[in-house]
Image (cartoon, rainbow, N blue to C red):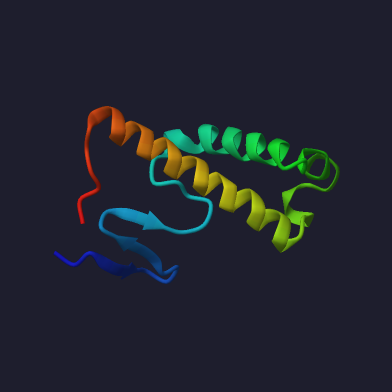
Length: 92
C-alpha cells in the first residue's frame, strides 16, 4: 500500500492514513477542541487581546507561529501522559 499519495488537482497529501493539509483536522470532531486549545494558548501567551482586536488573519507570522508551536507542545505532552498511563511506548 502506498502511504503517500496525491489526489486530484488540489494535491491533498495523505501519509499513513493522516491527511496533511491546512484547516482540515484528521478527525472532524476535533475541530472545536482544537479551536478551544488555540484560544487557550493565545491567552497564555497574552495574545488573546490581539486576536480579538485584529483576528488571526491579521496577526504576524511570528505570533501565529508562537500559538501553533505551543499548541503542538501541549498536544505532545498530552499524548505522552496518555501513553504513560497506558504504559505504552511510541512504536518506531
